[in-house]
Amino acid sequence: VTGVIYDDRHAAFEATLALTEQVNEKIGMITGPISSVHTVRRANGFLQALQSKSIPYDPDLVRSCNWDRDSGFTLGGELIQAGAKAIFAQNDLIGTGVIDWCNQNGVEVGKDVFLIGFDNREVSAVCRPKLSTVALPLFEIGQTAGRLLLDSLEGKPPQAQEVMLECTIIRRESTGKI
Image (cartoon, rainbow, N blue to C red; front, side, top):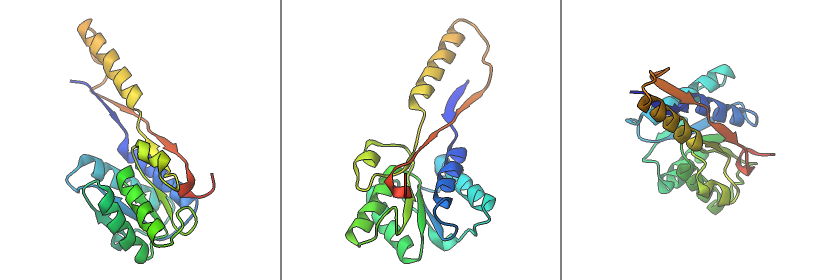
């Protein structure tokens, strides 16, 4: 069985590096459920990016939730009040929740705190300010899976057990100057 997936770890690494262009300390993260493979891979990328920039990891600036906007609101507020200068939200719903908290509490996203999400959901482009995010290669996943299926139906052996595709960073207002 051949699988087509995207590289969560590398995408989270690149997303965190985008935050390090603005700050070099107190970078927080709001993850999905710790039982999720996506959470683990994204957390690994986050940690590797911090290490690559010699930025200390602070476990007090990490929270976990269930991928929802309300949790982003609550946990984002906690992280900002704990001194986070930037936040990697492991999905866009969490990220827009952080933006909601900031908007309600006079914190300017993209200036006072920097933020990036993950998934490039429609909400990331319409919230204010617009949320920088990681775009998943959804079209390419479908295209590659379709090609592999056709190859299989034609009797061609799979060239790999797993095809890993790269994601793209979408820079918007939440990470500062564009």
